Length: 226
Image (cartoon, rainbow, N blue to C red):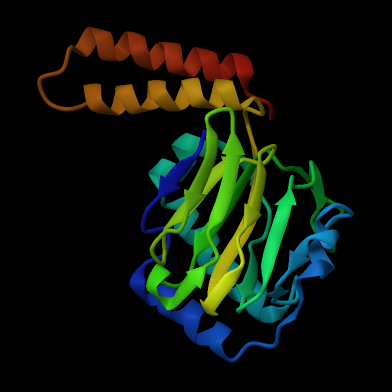
């Protein structure tokens, strides 16, 4: 399931991120790549765990806590602290699949990466190229969203970032461990939750709403992990 989530960051938070990243100290992005990724990754990132990365990451996490679409689609149990990347002309990230498990630095906590997320921090007109391409059973999906918008997709997907040819692409990326690890089950629950929300409107069949809500929670009870 690939879902675009609009307006994850409010305007002031987005401006804070962009202003801070304009003067940030960047390092080679391969510092956080796995064995497969480091061979095809060419970008720069904020140092993981730096004071600035934590500050900006907290802005994003606060936005996610208030975002009903993110909660419904991902059913997050844990979220990896957001990372930040910049691509300039010639830089790219070749085809890869994200590591299945990541260790949160300094905590000893491991997160299973069920869902990958990319939050775009500048507008598509600021740069050429830099599209996120995600492959699934329906083909390759090209993603290039407005600033403040985010895409989530199964971390098991083959994906890549096309070369930037003009300007700079700024983004935050991270992973979530879902309470429901199976993407097909998460998709079914998301569809059910969407239907429940529509039935909650005035004039809907109250009995059907109760039954459908019960189905949702009983499936979640059946499939979820603590």
